[in-house]
Image (cartoon, rainbow, N blue to C red; front, top):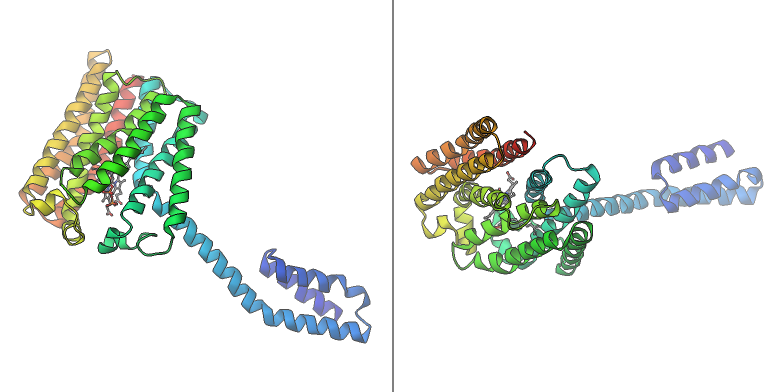
Length: 359
Ligand code: HEM
Ligand SMILES: CC(C)=CCC/C(C)=C/CC/C(C)=C/COP(=O)(O)OP(=O)(O)O
C-alpha cells in the first residue's frame, strides 16, 4: 500500500510539472508514509487518493485551458504589432544605423536601437488596429485579427499599445537622443492620425503611408550620429518611400475586392483596371534604382561606385521587370510575383548600399 501511494504520488508530481494542487496532494500523501499502517490513516490516505484521482482530469483540463489561453494571448499581442512589417523595419534600421556609423555597430547598441524602434513601430501597428477594429471585420484578411474577432478587449490593446510606444520612445530618447525619438513620434502620429483615417477617404493615403513607412529610416540613421540635414539620410528615406509603391500596388490589386467591399479607398478601387497601380509600381521601382545609384556615388572612389551601382541595378531590376509584367497583364499571378520580388529587393538594395560604406 505504502509503495502504491509513493508510486502514485511520484506520477502526479511528474505529470503536473509542479502545478500546485495535485503537487500539494502528492506531498501530503508522501509525508504520511511513516504511519500508514494505522487503519484510520490508511482509510484517509485511500480516500485522498480517490479524491485526487477524480479531481485530476478536471485540474488537467483547467491547466491545459490556462496554457492555451496564455498562448493565444501572447500570439494575439504579437499579431497586434503587425510583426512582419516590424521585422522588415528592423532590417532597414540595421542598415541605416551601420551607414550612419560608417562601420559596424556594437551588439549592445544595435539591440537597444532595435528594441526602441521595434516597440514604437509595434505600437503604431497596434494603434492602427485599434482605430480600424470595426471596419477590419469587413475584410477576410483582417477579420481574424484579435480586435475584430473579439479575442481581445479594446482596453487591453490600448494599454499594451500605449505602454509599448511610451517605453520605445523613452529607449530611443534616453539610449540615443531626442532626434530619433522625435522622428519615431512623428512617424507614429503620421501613421495613426493621418494615414489611418485617410484610408477610407482618398487613394492619396498611399503617399502619406509611404512617408510614414519610410521615416523609420531616419530613426536608425540619426540614432547613430547621422543628421537630418544629411542627403544620405534622405536618399535612404527615398529608397524606402519609392519601394512601397510596387510593394503596396501589388497588395492593392490582390485585395482590391476586399478593400472595395470594406469601404477603403485604394488606387485599385478608384481605378479598377489597375493601369494606374501598375504605372505607380514602375515609377516606384525606377525611383528605387535612382536613389540607390546616387547613394552608391556619394562615397569616394569611382570603381566602388560603379560596382555598387551595378549591384543596385541587378538587385532592383527583378522588381522593375515584375512591375512591367504586371502592367502588361494585370492578374493575381503577376501581382503576387511583384509582391514577392518587392520583399526580396528591399533587403538586397540596403545590403548593397551598406557594404558600399565599408568599402
Ligand atoms: C504605403 C505603405 C504600405 C502599405 C499600404 C502596406 C500594406 C501592407 C499590407 C496590407 C500587407 C498585408 C498583406 C497580406 O495580408 O497579405 C503588407 C505586408 C507586408 N508589408 Fe507592407 N505596407 C506598406 C509599407 C510597408 C513598409 C514600410 C514595410 C517595411 C519596411 C512593409 C513590410 C511589409 C511586409 C514584410 C509584409 C508581409 C508580407 C507577407 O506577409 O508576405 N510594408 N503590407
Ligand atoms: C517607428 C515607427 C512608428 C514605425 C512605423 C512604421 C509603419 C507603421 C509602417 C507601416 C507602413 C504602412 C502604411 C503599413 C500599412 O498599414 P495598413 O493600415 O494599410 O495595413 P492593414 O490594412 O494591414 O491594416
